[in-house]
Length: 181
Image (cartoon, rainbow, N blue to C red; front, side, top):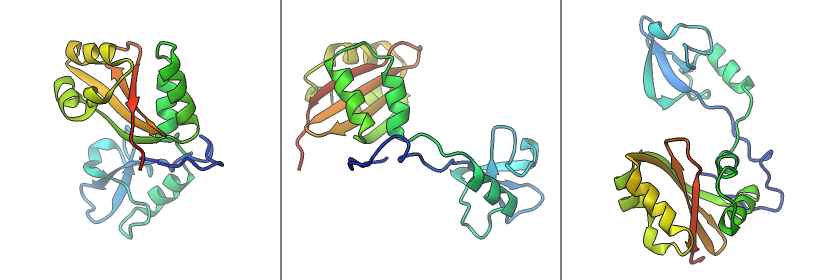
């Protein structure tokens, strides 16, 4: 995840190159293609390609030249900070939410962002005992959902926890003091 709190940091400067999954044409092994929702960037249909569980690497010598060019020309994508900021805008207004939005807008570190079984995320990643504001609704969200999204953000002396409900409900923001070192 991105960690940059430089004075010149902005959502525009933090844009990232577009990423694509990788795949190989079934009848032409040895050339990796950039995958889209329906096939490859160079036009191969989905049913002629085996998808891999890694990203397309345009600099790889085995990369399809046409996919390489199209991947390089693809528009940049928002950073983790910008994507999370846009989601947190829907959270209930409050000081923690506003401080998190301000931190994300200046490049606060998004240290973790995942989705999975609520009980496992609460047990292993939420660190609810470190939160001092908003912990009640966050704990209730973990108890009420089967799966959920979770993001942890560090900004100065604060560690924020964002819970992203699967049901389309408002994101929840909690925070606690964070030791900076």
